[in-house]
Length: 169
Image (cartoon, rainbow, N blue to C red):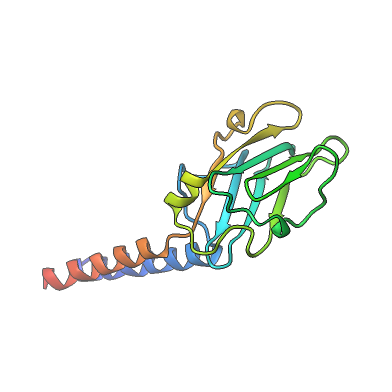
């Protein structure tokens, strides 16, 4: 296969990959997400987020802390009872049997839109426990993991590959 054809196929595959990443609003910030791990996916387009326990038995406690008090308490889609806390700097949710959850939904505006992966990692501190016992960090798949989209990285890869094609000619 010629260099131009190989490069063209490579550019096409990167483009397809970037479309998938952008559509899912997911780019790994810390490690590669795997099954049996806790994942926090943030959408910088609207500030929403989803916390999920990927194929685990469920989350029993969740503690999310914002160093700069960026949380919008009205953005949580669920009930706050008993020991739970929901403020600008702390979200804490206790879920015991039979109410163990697989994930939590945080609607648009829960975090400010447009945060970068670095801002997320610097501001949001999070930990919790899983059913029947153990911390998120002890999950079989490791983690916990942050997912934040990074479409500019895909754009830079495509531009670099186009530059290689032009230079090769």
